[in-house]
Length: 249
Length: 163
Image (cartoon, rainbow over all chains, first blue to last red):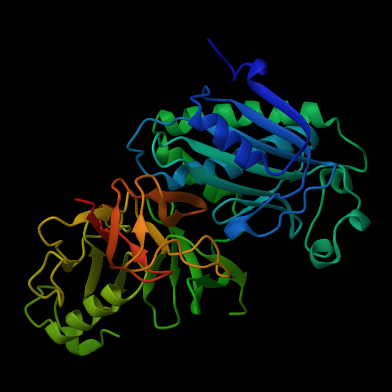
């Protein structure tokens, strides 16, 4: 039985504009599931809404091609599972207990160590899962605007890590968590995410769309993985997407 | 919301329908896919059409209303005129008319689009789905606003195909 995607599906680059863009090209050309694009540095790495993503050498910048059965049942759970996969990797490598911020930012002691973005190719339904992990940076390496909020694996463990080994550990963990999605073990996904999350129970401002904010307490997830926020009037609102900012109760 | 005037028992006989109507309108106008209001005597769970109740594990609601499919719903579903092609949402999520807040919209009314051109994005939980036009034609109508929540199968954009 296969235990991960084959290594020969990995495409490594010294520099790319964006691993997401390259993986999207591969998806359109019919590449196999598990095809992976890694770059030491990205000149146009991006996060949500094409925001610049810090992508200097020293981080793991990778995109993995998935071809889930369509139509996907509860696609948001794939987003939760990607965060859980990184949680698995950090625990296996260094016994770090990371926390998951809805839906899938990965935090260690209040600072972000990993961001995840997924893009779906319209025609085939293929998903490009983009992951950025801060691996070997020192605090001074981060740009000013994120320095106070970012952390790396090296800062957590006090030692440098072998990037290809971390990359393979991430691919393996993703493969295992993806099987959980394909096998529709949805209740398990929700309970595991809740076990490791840092969002539920906190007060949040959720920004969505232009100028819209919902404030309240994050109380639970819906079966689809959407965030349920109870506002000050006691109304429960279902959040499908948005930026989560901490809020004082 | 939903004060004690909603009823003194759990049979639903004394429900204040105007308050239920207000809740439905609130959901209709918002980007959320639904909400639940609960008081001592009453629980109202409003879902937009096509979304499973999110609190199914809690005791059965006294009143369950699916907005869009109920006579209390304020608006009829938008239907396309004959010959108009509808682009529909492939999943529940948030509609974006541009790739990011600083960019121009993918399309506007009157634009000519080619088959395969991206016309909008739907996001659910950081899964971004670029929606392509499956016909070539002219954008006739954009039915949802930037940042608005959409349901599975909801009509987003009307295209008049090239003849």
